[in-house]
Amino acid sequence: MSRAPQYWLMKSEPSAFSIDDLQCAPARTTCWDGVRNYQARNYMRAMRRGDQVLLHHSHADPPAVVGVAEVVREAYPDPTAFDRKDKHFDPKSNPAKPTWDMVEIRLVRKFAHPIPLDLLKRAPGLTRMELLRRGSRLSVQPVRPDEWKIVLKLAQK
DNA sequence: GCCAACGTTGGC
DNA sequence: GCCAACGTTGGC
Image (cartoon, rainbow, N blue to C red; front, side, top):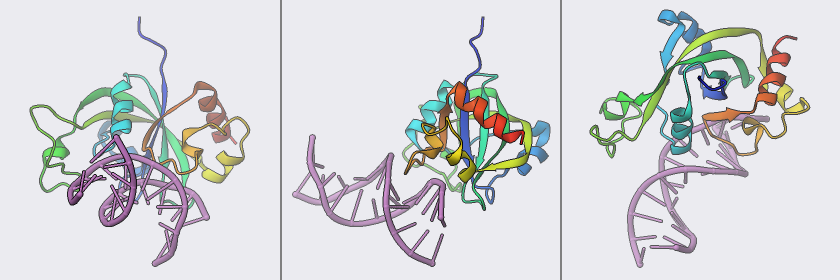
């Protein structure tokens, strides 16, 4: 018996990787490499197949939640940590005992209308949302079920 | 482009 | 173990 799906949010800068890139990817699937923050990594390790993920565009105009993806592969070592040429190369990470993991996600749907950050800020019930916390920079974060429901409802308008 | 908030690093 | 310096994130 598998547990109920959990909810998450992942950020990307669309100039680096956008929801359109995901839509064009083979099987609309991508590995989420390059995360180099311990808390974000730990959240990825807690993800299970079937968990649902909000996709957020940061450094965008406007910053917005743009769609939904689904976890299709659970955490495994991120090879870019060992690639000297990679922007996220980590010389301290040991391939025999990898520090950094990634997951694979598949696009579920792209919202017809992205939900801009300022709309989220004004929505009742989202004040505790990690994304909206002042100074929050976590690129992978949990979303509460009630928050998930509210956000998806906003996407329908 | 600015800058506040945050995480990490390293000297002590 | 403290904390200043530094690099990064991300809204504005």
